[in-house]
Length: 122
Image (cartoon, rainbow, N blue to C red; front, top):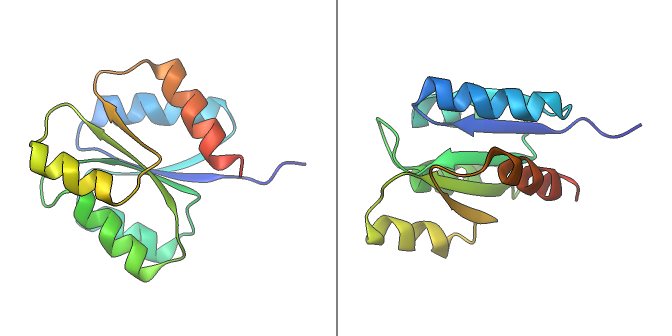
């Protein structure tokens, strides 16, 4: 039996985040969701995630800040960043953290599903 995988989806766009969650749950992946960075950090401290999917622009902080905080506090966890629009500076900061991928919204849901599937297979 396969290990259950747990993914945290962080985006303030609730319909978009819910769509991604449904796609992953249909694949048998447990998901938790957050709309703000502080919620995400609280969840990261409580739950062991196999993958973080973070929007770069959150209402209270950047996805870079969330991932940097997570990396300091928990075992190394993979990350996929997403953005519809972000400054070049923020994108460069994100890429310096060596994410698995930086996705530009909108993106193909099937491609996202396959990317997550590969990321959590390890």
